[in-house]
Image 1 (cartoon, rainbow, N blue to C red):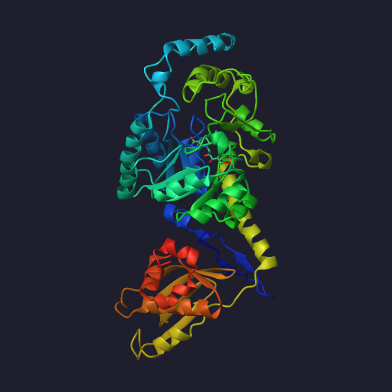
Image 2: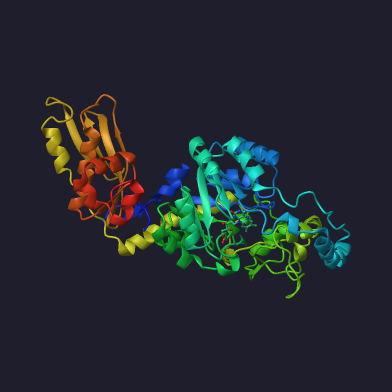
Length: 509
Ligand SMILES: Cc1cc2nc3c(=O)[nH]c(=O)nc-3n(C[C@H](O)[C@H](O)[C@H](O)COP(=O)(O)O)c2cc1C
């Protein structure tokens, strides 16, 4: 089960009560400090841009930059570039494992044999075979130091779990960590390592299948089965990835137990991405996609073309990163010469759903259409319940518990702002903010004016909300620390919190 709370805002029209469903307040949005729990998937290998990441962050989501393959100084620079474009939260992404076979196995002999195989292709592009290098790939260990030093708001990673020292450093410097799982077992491993958020990536996703416990070709699970299975097994909030390109996918992800959505292909298709114009155009043609190891040596989803056809079945594909190193001059030439037939055309199965050409436009469509869709669904299935009962708060205040007997107070259940307020004259002495959905009340915030210390006003407001939830037969999610701490100290309210959720709030299960 996930922690999902949706705010109901009363419609201003007359007639029967209809309510507009606001965007969910989830742990993903609160941990990342973003308005909408939408993450732009990072793109390693050149398709990320600071502009794309900043556009998404500025529009209320989380922009990401895939820094796979970049050197430490380039990583430091790109974080500076993003910071110059947005004051908001963003993520930098790395690949934890960068080699499927040690460099010692890539002997000069084996290397020369592979070069020989590709010589006609190099010749057709007029490019030289790449020289045998000192090092085939930039190592994670070197890159991650630059990330820790620059302290981006969030650090996401794939193909493994960074060691404890790195995760501890992130915790102590306030970097939110985002791990990626392609199976339930990987999600559990990330959870046990204490990673803050877990992306559950279905096999519909574009780009590499980022498996790290079992081989990728044995980890091919679609999102509809993977997401709820992961949400059932982990404490950390889950972000759904793979096949999501519009509001329908976002709402489905939330229904499956995710608390956010990571979207790759649809952002790759926008003008702000670093994808080749030919690549972006191909995405809008609703292409067929396939998984292949030909391009890098690791399994990845893209549009089949002459590049993916270079190694017919039976021909040796070198392990990662050597295969990619050998094909790099071909890919670079295809890029320079705008040859889509020989370019790297990563693409997910959602390509048939694309319609937006700008990141802002896509964010706007996702956010407004998700609200509309949630509202449309709720109009057919949700019966609005009245606000919580205020009897206990009224009684307490009447007895002078808060402001003194001669105070002039009023208690307001302000459904328009989804909060219970206690007002002293015209001033708000304190309030508890709640969000409601079918069967559920989430307590998201309490606030008490500084001139009412020591009166237990916050506690009384929380009791009012809890009693109201009990009267209305609602379960409670204590999303704010005040509310979870209060229930921890008052176990008579523990039964209101669903047993499956208690662990999330450090409450006894
Ligand atoms: C061109 C491309 C490059 C990608 N590179 C990375 C990467 O370096 N790191 C990563 O975590 N995910 C990477 N991904 C995956 C995306 O971030 C995202 O999770 C995925 O695309 C979501 O699925 P969708 O394509 O169906 O929306 C890449 C995806 C694409 C299409």
